[in-house]
Image 1 (cartoon, rainbow, N blue to C red):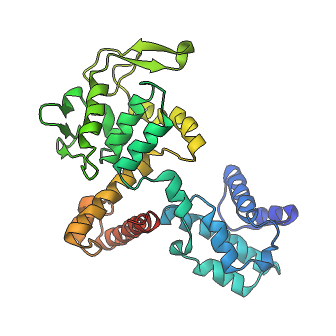
Image 2: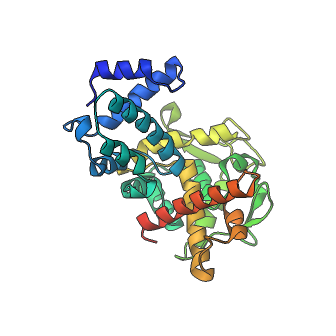
Image 3: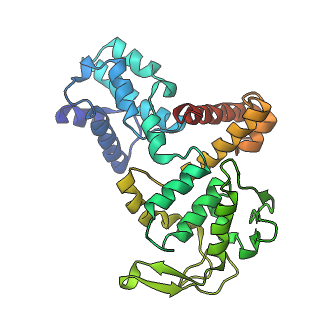
Length: 316
């Protein structure tokens, strides 16, 4: 635990450019991080301790880890200049890599190894809830299949082609396929069709009742809106997560999307071999806005490493 007076001195003397709000955020970050090992004094922290501390934090991307570590590193340097810590501690913090951290439990909470697991967990969480969470469940399935949440509001009911069991991407108009690895394709597609054709839904509002959907050409609608916005869709996960908390799971849109993306990459690699050095395939799977080749290569390498972490933690 860091002494309060020492913390205040650091915040006032730090060379980091900070607003009043960012100072509060940094203080909270440092208190939380070093509070993970309250019985160990700052100078006595080892690399093993640091790895255990980072393994308790919610860092499942290299970028968030690097950002966090840079702040810890700045504080450690200041502490060393004040006579606390050691050169070895500075070295241990500097040498710490994202790959050193145990992320297993985070993947067990936020990620889904395949569509079967996502489906099964949603069935468990929303058991006996009627159709109340069908909008969330439908959106989660489509996001896992690779449709960005921001594109879902444009999805028409007609984009679910019952005659050919085809899903049409609302923006690219490409076919989106449901994997049939576990023989669940028909069941999952039928769920989406039932949601599409439903005239009403259950709700916990108004004391619990069934309310009619507004007539709409769009797939995602409600009892009061004929066309959901991306923000409205994003918010439907809030009530879903209140139920999921009991099962120690979290539905987060980006991680649902990444779970599906990583699954598709793993299936491709099983058939065609690694895409690690295949720039064309990396570009196909990963979205990258960098214009310079070297920047794209760095981004692709980072994204591929995060995919590899997913595979390792979920034993794919």
